[in-house]
Amino acid sequence: MTEQNNNLGWLNLTSLAMPVKVLFTGYLMAIGVGLMMAGLQIMLTHGMADGKFGLSVDDIVYSYYGNRSNSKLEAKLNGSMKDKAPPAERLEIIKWVHNGATKEEWDAKIHGIMQKHCAMCHAHTPTLPNVAKYDEAKKLAEVDHGASISQLTRVSHIHLFGISFIFMFVGFIFSFAVGFKWWVKVALIFTPFAFLVIDIASWWLTKLNPGFAWFTIIGGLAYTAASTVMILTSLWQMWITPWKKGKVSCNAWSGECDKA
Image 1 (cartoon, rainbow, N blue to C red):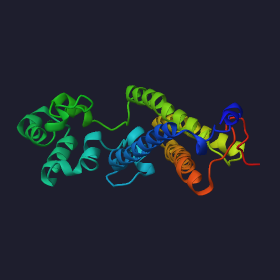
Image 2 (cartoon, rainbow, N blue to C red; image 1 turned 180 degrees about the vertical axis):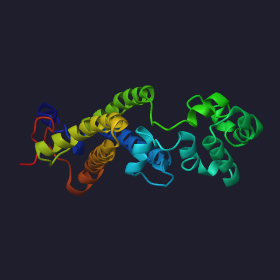
Image 3 (cartoon, rainbow, N blue to C red; image 1 turned 60 degrees about the horizontal axis):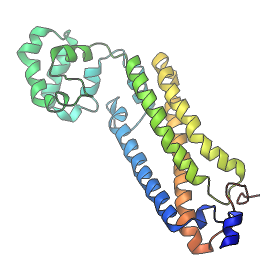
Image 4 (cartoon, one colour; image 1 turned 135 degrees about the horizontal axis):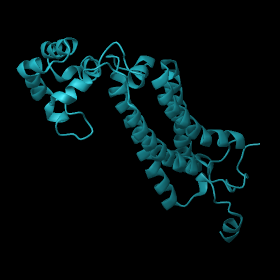
């Protein structure tokens, strides 16, 4: 035991002490579920921007560049908000948008529809526009230019700070893995950071030119794939490898555990 501590042969996923394995496992499981929930949330928001379930290039374009032949209000009514009001009343709102979103028609008919079907969420959730107010609804009835610069700035810095911390700890745990060539381990650890930057940069570029929307999908798929490999490998080596093959005695941080 003293010799193993002196040469740090315990410093790999297969040989970690039980409390450390439980700590790492709890974190990875929570993060794994969180990533799945994030994917579902994207499908239910951005993934409905074109009115069809499932994330597509058109969804990315509509979210960041906008649908410049349409309004945000109409796009939402035909997309993620389609089930929030009966078809006849959704059509009334869309007609109001096409007719110039006048105050007279709002007072006569549209305000009541908004109060009945939309205010329950939009009037009480600070992050949502209060479409029960005429000024807010009229803004959404204007031509859709996609995400605003202020929205992009806010979401970009939140994602860069928050997701980078997630990738740092996932990569930190995976750095104790055994049996990988050193360059494969380095590539897997670095990939989520690189493609996170590409993903977020593509939001801004898509705002300027819809042709960059592909990079949003590529970035998201790449960092999700690399993170999934690291999470599953780490869990496997902590619990399955010691059970099937026994513990490995090597220092993962010194390169002793790397595959030749």
